[in-house]
Image (cartoon, rainbow, N blue to C red; front, side, top):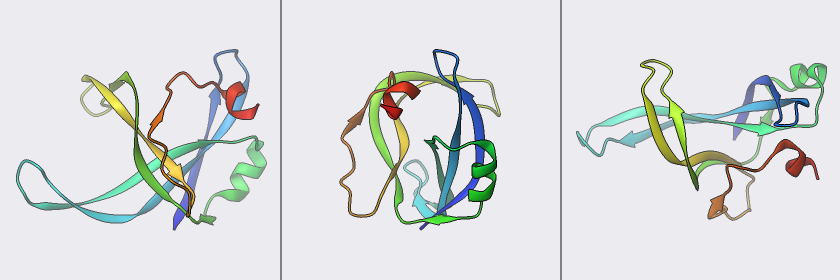
Amino acid sequence: MLTIINFEKRQSASGKEFFSLILQGGVEMVRSAESGQYYATIKRCSVTSTLDEEACKAMVGEQLDGKIEKVQCSPYEFVIPQTGEVIELSHRWSYVPNGVTTPTAISTTTSYEDVLA
């Protein structure tokens, strides 16, 4: 089960504004590849929407069936907010509804207009 915890106003490459919902899963225990110790983590992702701001506000706290999974994509640069370090990643966290097979790869060049088409 996932919870809509927030929303963000974003802008497409063409300048059109839209809102994305921020989804969060439950606490998961993950084993560190380096130390072998377990740590608690929570997966989050965003989902593009066609909702207006008022509808997004009303959705905060709602729960959705599904999961957040790691999906391979084209490499891209990511700035670690706490340190400012720039790293290259080749995966994204993506919402996957229950009963749907995880996509094997996604494009980092998909635009808002492509999603709504």
